[in-house]
Length: 585
Ligand code: ARG
Image (cartoon, rainbow, N blue to C red; front, side, top):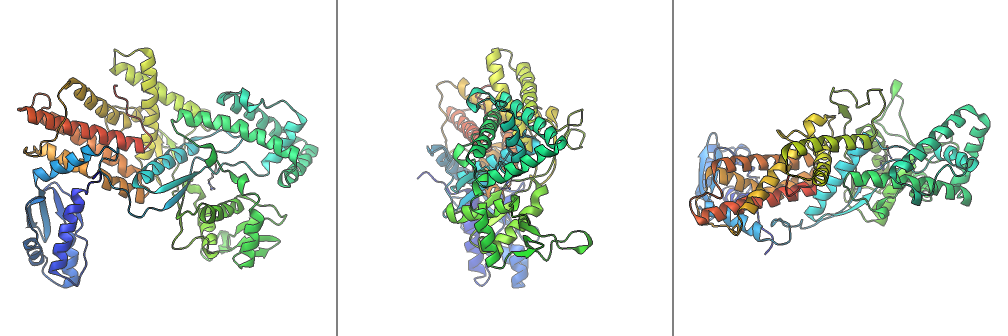
C-alpha cells in the first residue's frame, strides 16, 4: 500500500457525500482549501444554497449534522455566511504522514494518475550554427521542469527538440564550406566552446561574402536547391554543421545540468520529406488554398494592417516550404506516429500567432480534435535587472554560457562565505549546484507568461524566495538528522501536535495535490511557491519546537520524522524542477 490518499481528498469526499445527502438533486464541489482559522475551510455551500434557493447558514448546519466526526475530522462548525471550518484529528495527520514516509518507491505516497496520456513536449530548441541566448534558456528550463512534473503524475512524456537545422541560410553556409574546406574541424575533435567559435567564424565569413558578392549569392541559392533535393555531397556538409552544433548544444545543456537525449533531437529537417504530403493533404481537404501561387490558410479572426487577412503560408510561390510546413508536418508525426494525446510547445510568446495559426489549421484538417489538444506555453522575455530587455553593456545579446558561468561564480562567493571548512573543490561543486539552481528557480518561480528580471544578486540571495534559501533549508535538516546519530526518526501518532507541527504536517500532505495541479496547469511556479512555503513552515516549526532537545524520546523521534519527511519532500520537489539539493552547504 504505497499510495496514500491526501487529507484534502478524504475530507472532500466526506463533504461531497454530506452535500449530496442534503440536496440529492444538486451536485456541488465543497471547495475545500487550507485556512488559517481551522485546518480547512469549505466555501462550496454558498453556491449550492444559491442554486437551491436556501438559506446558506441553515443548509450548512444541515450538512454539518451529516458529517461523522471521529477518526479524520475532529471538528466541523459553521462560520460566517455559511462556511465550514474543519479541524483534522492529530492522529489522522500523523498516520497519513507516516504512510507517506513508509512509501519506499520515492513517491511520498502520491498515487499515479488513473488515466494518463502521452504528452509530446517541444522544448529546448536552439538553432544550428547559432549561439544560444536567454530565450533558449527559458524554453529548456521550463520544458524540463514541466516534463519532470508530468512524469511524476504518471503521464508518458516524449521530448522533441525542434532545432532550427533547415532553411535557406544553409545554402550560404554549405557553399562557403565547400569553397573553404577545413574551416570546420571534425566534431569529434572539438569541445563545445571551440565548436561554437568555429561556427561563429564560418557564419560571419559566409554572411559577409553573401552580402558582398552577387555571384556567391547565386551559388548559395543553387546550394539550397541541392540541399532540398538531397544531393549527397551537400547533405554531408550540412551534417557537419549539425554535428558541430550538437557538440556545442550538449556542452550548454551539461552546464545547465540537464539531460537531453539524442533520439529526441528531431529538428525541422526531419520533417522535410513529409512536407509535400502535408501540403497536398491540406489542399485536397480544402483547408489550404492557392493565392498568388502560394498555398495558404486564411483565418477570420487574424488580420493585419488595413484589416487585411494574414495567411499562414504552407508553401511559397517558388515551391519552397518554411517553418509552418515543418510544424504542421511535425504535428502529423506526433499525433499519428507517436500517438500523443497532448502536444505541448514551450516557445517564446512572440511566436504565439504562429502557433495559433498552425493549431487552427491542424484542427481544420482533423489532426487535432477533442482527443488530441495542443498548447503553446508561451513564455515572456528575460529582462535585465534594470527592467529592459537583457543585453550586454555593449548592447549585444548575452551569451548563454557567460551568463551561466557568472551565476556559478556568484554562487561560489555565497558558498565560500558560508562554509569556511569546505575545500576549493567542494566549493566549486556546490557552487555549480547553487548557481544553476538559482538560474532555474528564478525562471520557474515567475509565472511563465510574464517577463522576468535576470538579477543575479537577487537570485543567489539567502533571504527570500530563492533556490539557495531552499537548498539551505534542506542542508540544515540533513545536518540535524546527522546530529541525531543513532536516534532514528519515527512517527508517533499518539502524540499531540503543536500548532506549528500541524501547519507543517498539513502542508506536507498537500505535496502530491500541488504537483498534480501545477502539472495540469503547466504552472511550475505553483510548485516553487509550495516549496518556498514548505521551507518557511519548517523554519517556524524549528523555531517553536525543539527537536533533539524535545521533552520525551518519542517527541524527539516524531520531530525527527517531521524533519526527514520535510527534507524528502523538498528534495523531491526540487528534483522535479531540475534543481539539486546538496547534502551540505
Ligand atoms: N528554433 C526555434 C527558435 O529558436 C524554436 C522552435 C520552436 N518549436 C517549434 N516546433 N516551432 O525560435
